[in-house]
Length: 55
Image 1 (spheres, rainbow, N blue to C red):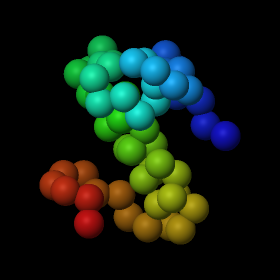
Image 2: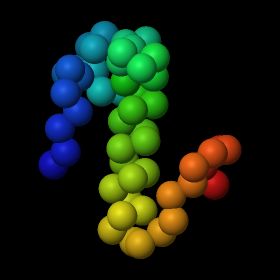
Image 3: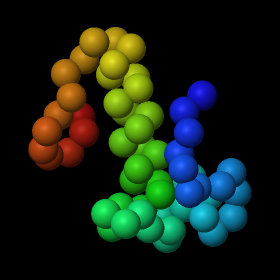
């Protein structure tokens, strides 16, 4: 389990909402995607991209 503070499970502030925004301007959906990718890469010792699209 990984907490995504401020996000709820469902609705307009859900963790997969493309409309709800964090203070840094990212959508909740983008933050959730970034977090999942970080977790997967960390568990598989894969390098983390610093720029550009995710392969």
